[in-house]
Image (cartoon, rainbow over all chains, first blue to last red; front, side):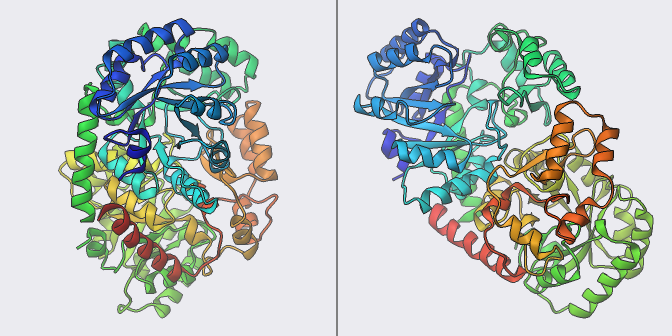
Amino acid sequence: MNKICKVFDVKYPIVAGGMVWCSGWRLAAAVCKAGGIGLIGAGSMTPEVLREHITKIKDACNSQEKGTWGVNIPLMKAGVEEIIEVVKEELPPVVFTSAGSPKKYTKTFQELGIKVAHVVSGSKFALKCVEAGVDAIVAEGFEAGGHNGREETTTMALIPQVADALRKAGADTPLIAAGGIASGRAMAAAFALGAVGVQVGTAFALAEESGACKEFKEYCTSLQEGDTMLVLKKLSPTRLVKNAFFDRIMEAENRGASAEELLGIIGAGRPKLGMFDGDLIEGELEIGQIVSQIKEIKTAERIINDMISEYNTIILEKFA
Amino acid sequence: MNKICKVFDVKYPIVAGGMVWCSGWRLAAAVCKAGGIGLIGAGSMTPEVLREHITKIKDACNSQEKGTWGVNIPLMKAGVEEIIEVVKEELPPVVFTSAGSPKKYTKTFQELGIKVAHVVSGSKFALKCVEAGVDAIVAEGFEAGGHNGREETTTMALIPQVADALRKAGADTPLIAAGGIASGRAMAAAFALGAVGVQVGTAFALAEESGACKEFKEYCTSLQEGDTMLVLKKLSPTRLVKNAFFDRIMEAENRGASAEELLGIIGAGRPKLGMFDGDLIEGELEIGQIVSQIKEIKTAERIINDMISEYNTIILEKFA
């Protein structure tokens, strides 16, 4: 039996990433009902809003679902302690942590019966996850949307190296691949590389149940290869859609703007402005490189079913 | 039968990239004898040196080999017309062109009985290859070493999109994946994504028969994840190993240095200095991200046999 399915008690080893302004309870619940792991993204939520989303998903999903739900917590988030408190009180079945040390909260959550995965961008961080005793590791490549690792290692290069590092360390922690995965073909590729699960961001950000606004989703289905770029490397490297806001960042970076100046250009509230309020020109539009493959807004269930069906077809066609 | 094997009449659908200062006749011949497509890299050769390498490989390889050999021509190379003339006279069985338009020489070479492949970094360029009537397309991702595309699309994101674009255009041109591929696992991943062949650079650059110096090869086997980076985006984006020379480029780029200043920092002869003469501090060291996976210098034959054997194991383990 697939290890991710076993550890998290789900039908399919597919995780819907916890994305700011996209991953509310509706998306997480739809993924949970369709057999995957649906994450609520706490990154863009106040503690009160998070509690509200958890209450709603508890109503929507019961223990009979094929999948499960959880909360993604970016540990560098300002005021993360309050988010942690909500999670400790509400007890989601699963927590995915990212952008910080896996050692800080893993044991705390596990002692409360919560399964914990942590997101990394390199083998040395994966080994820290093993020390922290996480239940699963997500290794995310350069092609992923939004905030990203500094080493720029792509999914193709990253997954086999993390898998090797885990094997050498004698760890059997299951590995989930992320970055550039929006199809059954990519899922098969990730499995060939050594993953046993996939975390899918971009495709679910554009799902019907995603909390992002319609304008953002529809605009994203029109994007072409090369329409996203990793910038803001002097701050926290972030993959953005190229728009007027992006152009100002690019212009500033090309003339050597400092981190301080870049912070000034970004200001506050840009991701909400773009992804939630639908300002496609001045908003910060976070999405992965694989966005150009997605030409249709689907339900989360169809995304999962299409991935599984394509995966099975590819295995038969290519490798049987 | 595998399409690349059929079109190029080789045992294995593995191409050894034509890399500056690495891909001389020795490496190309070893790959040819081991059943792959071994390319001589004309990018770092004068017309006379190229002719010498072709003469030697003609002596070393005959038509009974399991593989074949060819010449890689970066079309933007200064004085490429003379290189083209040598190729037209010497008639290698195969030519791979890159960094330029596939329309310029494809028909000329094909009329002389030469099979032609062209290297691209995006779907729109792949469609130009179809119009030009090439025999195969190499799609190379962001993780590849040396000169690289501007859109930064990774192999994981690139291959399925190029495969889809070809299918939509009704083209059955076989697709070769490049970038981050140095193992049978990655070959299986590339096949799942839609490729029917792989072009391997980094692993063969470090092969025993590679023309690169021992110092460069040994140093490369010590590199870790994150030790290469794509820079020089104001000129031609290039993936380099981080050394003192790289640091000066980085420092200049961070303060907004112009293309002219960057050209001044680079000067002339840096790739030779690093990869051929072995100055690991001041030389330009071009290698792919997957270098950190390679911990041993192997013969080209062993690289190919290990890849095929791992590919077969992975298929059985993961997908049977």
